[in-house]
Each structure stands twice: as structure tokens, then as C-alpha cells.
Amino acid sequence: MTPEPSAIGWLRSDVSGDLRDWDEGRIRWLARKLGYDLRRTVVFDRLTDRPVHRLRMLVSRLEVDAVIVPSIGHFDGGRVPADLVAAADVITVSPEQTYARYATGLLPGME
Image 1: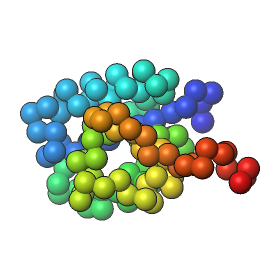
Image 2: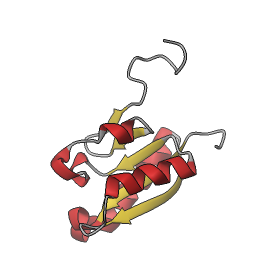
Image 3: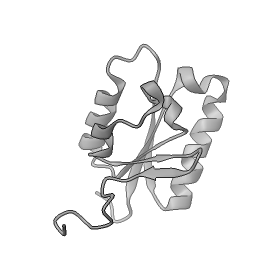
Image 4: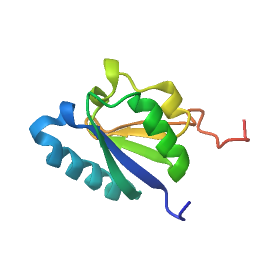
């Protein structure tokens, strides 16, 4: 991992539609604003098999701290998957909100 927190962007092209470039720009903007090293933006579509599983594997492989998405609408059912939040913070651009791994406010091992 890098000294600054790292993140990946993620979106579904079928949800973004014609606003895909706009959504990717907003992901980059929020990453900069929050001080994340945005490693890459991953784009899936409605035909991607097991998208959350694939995203979770990418989070593990790249050892990123966060996943930045345009909105929760990019997740099936409009809900942030708990197993993804268990691996990394999930940050939405609109509305700007963080679904944190450590909701207690304590660091791991300090409970």
C-alpha cells in the first residue's frame, strides 16, 4: 500500500449511460478532494457476471482502502453490499457519503 490512502473507482456503464465520462470525472474529483490515490476506474455493465464479487477480488488484489462510486444506484438493488464494506470503505459521489469499514470510530484491534 502507498503512504496515502488508495482507492479504485467503479461504475456500471448501463447505469451511467451517456454520462459515463461525467461519472468518471466526478470519481476522480472526489478522490483528489478526499486525498486518495485513485489507482484506476473499473467499468462493468449489466452483463458482467458477479460484479460485486469481481470488485471485491480487485479490492483485495490491489489492497485499496476505498471504492468510489457515482451513487448507490450502481449496485444491484440500490444497496451497498456489506461484504464489500467489510473489505474497503465505499464512498458515493452523490450524495457524498462514506460507508466505513470501521463504523465504531476505532481502528481494528482497538475495540
